[in-house]
Length: 410
Image (cartoon, rainbow, N blue to C red; front, side, top):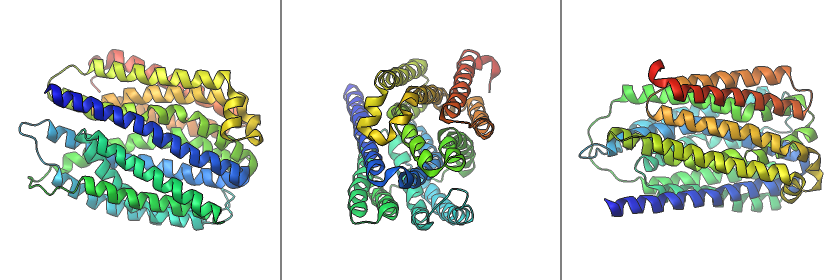
């Protein structure tokens, strides 16, 4: 038991530092693209990345569903195989991936003038990658639920390195935004293949309760919709309301500010299946929750502090002098994402224990963010202050729920 726990801690630590490397690599891609392509073309790349992030939350619904039920099966005595679960979710992922690709391409073609797009070709290439993305997410969820953090880390590494190498190569030979889209497609196909190798076991297993699985999937999907709205609506709306060059400046600001959110995501990845496992074993899950929340807020405070003390240095190093006009706003954006990252810990903790009110609160605030940004978008500072106010209100409600959930029973 002690050896197993030691191995789990080692693998979890490996995943944490591996994710830091992956995030650094992904940021390096975007930072260099910001320098090479200039603000106008970078706004196109940023929109592509934003759409990936939006759909990534849909993919996370598959990943978290796979993780939830795999962790549940692993906690049984004896453990139950997740092979039939994987088959069921793969079938759903293929259908959903094709549907998303078709709808996405049609909507982008119709709305190309709304987003001031020069070409829809990068977005068609992007759409083709969707089935592979969702299949990969199912495999990642299986690994997450089994607490197989080392193999999970390798899937993130493969995605980042393939994207990095091919992005630089294809942009260098002159493909520009199209090259970014092709590199994205190649990275998702390659990572799906790697994750498939790690989950290739074909153990016999009894049929799964598909109704319960889909019920949880729908709940997660509702929450991931709120993630889409909160994390990406500002960039999309700025792309609409501002000129391409200005939108590119805001995209750079958002990219740096979101270091807080993505820098703390690994904590949630580790927390989710471990809470499920402890709850099934009848153990207290609160120490794990408070440890995760404390870690997330500490990391967020450090990053926000750096953004407050050295904003021009950070922007100049990462993007160059062309983007310095947004440096004074950097720490404010970091505050908004810090508050959201903290709220996220509350939501994932309670979601792992089948408590749903935090999910509904989060999606409500996602809708409010869109409404308020449609009304208040006179300048970048106003856009950011709207997000700070909403995220502050959201985390206050999360704290109140944490204190009162036993009485609310929701």
